[in-house]
Image 1: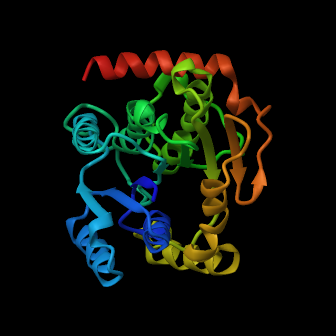
Image 2: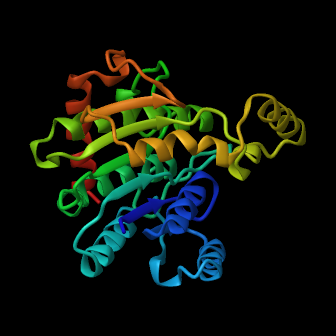
Length: 279
């Protein structure tokens, strides 16, 4: 029986992955912001006769202090982890910037800082596993540059650009993590699911017209959740040989792309350390 931690595990792909491993007989810890969805997960676990192997932790992962809280809670109760899946995301379009009470742009906090904190905070627990792996579900394999002059998009805020930008940051997180000697034999996989018909993806826009066309496009090119997690499950159960790898669905991404630049990875790491020091 393996021990698996999944952020964003109350809905969409995160929940589908959680249910797969519960049914397989593994111990699954999920983190999410909705207590209602968390209870639904626990109820489903009870129906499977897996209540002793299912844990829900409610947390707002856009907050550094909340990430630190769940790290401490998990470390107090568990001495090892086998798999870490980072799937917490925010899909909806915003018209204006949202700054958390810690002074961090919301999406930057949720979709980058949280993944940074959790990746590094569980290194020692993961290294106790025979085949430790982290899967970061972002969007590798896409071109784009880091906005170094305004890394949190506090000026000229654009909701869609911010979400896309977070994926470029996660590319560099993966590069720097894999270079760290402390990460040992942990495999780090960046995964781009492309278009998936999750509830969040279908409710991106408030505008009825934009919402209609989004749903139409996803019906044409999108995969359902169960189909979309197949390559992720394969990677989790059969980790790649390389310490760092990236996939766009089942196709491996060329790691020579500019978005995986080692110098930029080091630069971002230094910026991130400074941000965390000031919170």
